[in-house]
Each structure stands twice: as C-alpha cells, then as structure tokens.
Length: 122
Image (cartoon, rainbow, N blue to C red; front, side):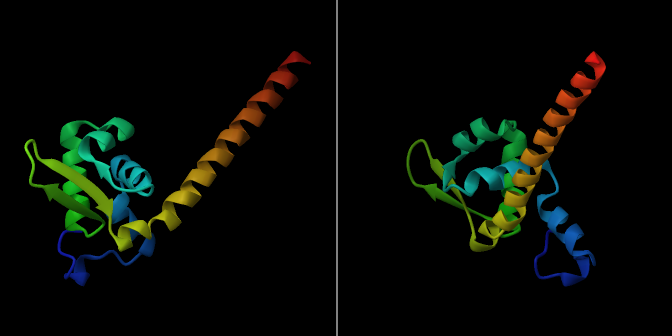
C-alpha cells in the first residue's frame, strides 16, 4: 500500500487487502515474533532467518504502513527496537488461525503417512 490516505489504491477484496500488507513470509514471521513483544533488529534477524537487507526493507514497509513502530535510542552504537502498533497487534487474529491450521495440516500429513505405510505393508 504506500499511501495510507489513498483509498483508491486499496483492493476491492478484503483478503487482497490483507495480502497487500502481509503477503510475504518475512512480514508474517515479523508479526508472529513481535506479537510476544518488542524486539531489536538483531533478535528479529535471528528468529525470522531473513537476510539483513530483506528484514530492513520489510520493517521499513511495515512502518510506512502503520503496522510497526520503530524506536531509536540515542546511544553509541545506536539501539533500535521494533514494536507492533495497535493495528499491527490486531493481525494476531489472522496469524493465530494460520498457526492452528498449519499444526492441523502437519498432523493430517503425519496420520496419512502412517496410514499409507500401514496399507503398503499389507
């Protein structure tokens, strides 16, 4: 999205609107990891597995979109922390069902594999 004041550029479909803001895995991982609280850049890099360039670009976009707040502390070296905004935290309602579905699907695959192995033995 880039201009939050320009509603004309918003997709008609609400699902497309969500994907406009969190439509890549790094943004989803960033939100997932910030749901537990404020994190420094290095912490996010470590837990998400994103490259420095990719993480920085996604955090910048998320800040521009109003999902993430960046706080710089006047220290040497500078300390930067990232926190979800209220609208960013509201994405928990999207991320948590994704996690539940992912767990359920992994269990489905495990049971299917077990069943398939059993059938191949008979």
